[in-house]
Amino acid sequence: EIDYGIRKYGIVVHPKYGKIYAYEVDGLGNSLLMDDANVPSLLSAPYLGYEIDARVYQNTRKFILSKDNPYYQESRDGKIKGYGSPHMQMRIRNNIWPMGQIVQGLTSTKL
Image (cartoon, rainbow, N blue to C red; front, top):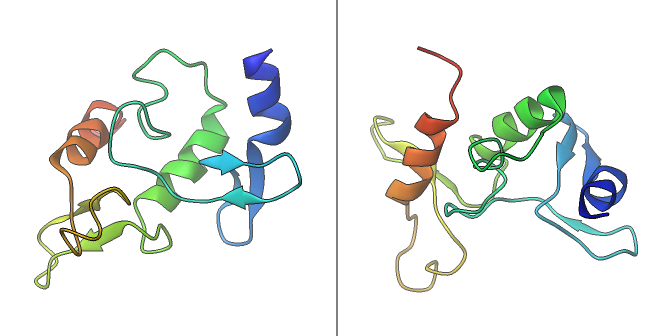
């Protein structure tokens, strides 16, 4: 039932990335597009054993690791990239969480 709900309501069409997993949906057609650099998260779904749709996940991953994700950040010199969390934005502006970078590495298909 949960998987059915995710596949029916939790996949939305983004104008730039195509079909992606939404972070939240409200059942009224609205969605929140972001990810929280934590576990569980959209990025960590395959690591946690969720059977993802590979194309939708890759599109979602591209979105999460881009400036289109409201919590994605890059250092001024561009050497540090990653995303943070809305939970800490009031305390730490432009935050990049190590957990997000760890999950990015654990779910990467690049060697």
